[in-house]
Length: 112
Length: 114
Image: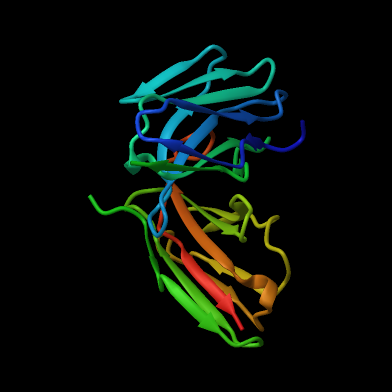
């Protein structure tokens, strides 16, 4: 994998459903993986910065795991709420450590 | 404290017009980044400053794009002779240091070139 790939591109769930997204990234020269949440007309908000293989991080109902050897990360949302509706972006640093390389994002829509 | 701010939030330009986009990073943040997000794509790196030094401008798509940060704080991204393909959201981010550190983003400037 040369680029950051995210799936699915979009999904629609009902309030209370749990869901998860996938981020795949190059496993060589790994430095750090970032997850951001971006709501329309707002600033992208950092959710997690993950660096170690096997890392698991949690923030409220949202959690993430990291596998640097195979180059993937999962983001989980438990009991989705309408306010979780946003685009979720993952990114990793380039080899020089000077720029984030983003996936296209997963757009989540939660209906009440 | 105040986050990263950007102005204007929205800009409509006629093709061929020059535009200037401003970014005010978080006070004390050494590193500043510009990204471009075209419709349906993720943000793409444009350029990176460490204080006033522009250390990486490999992502600037053409010589019509120019960025500066003369005093190591506020940064301006200038686009000369805008083209329709320049229409995008331009995001600015800052961080305390670089390598692996969390980047704090502004809300972006949405540029539409007619």
